[in-house]
Image (cartoon, rainbow, N blue to C red; front, side, top):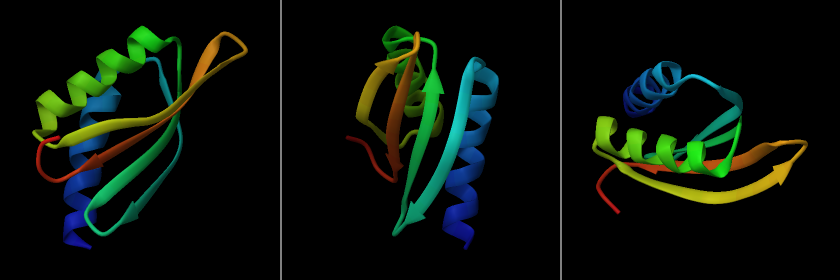
Length: 83
């Protein structure tokens, strides 16, 4: 539970300060957080990934990104350590 709360706190701080991100859902499994979200475009998604990696000092990977209805439906994975 503590690991989940620490990961969630790190991720939520970065995404809240970033703006223009709509989180659909978050899942946690064995030291990693998977986030399904909507964001305005691919450039902003890459910027969010870089911000999460820089602020959390964790490995951040874009798992998928699909453009639909002028937005990007994406999945990001955040886990301990660096990629």
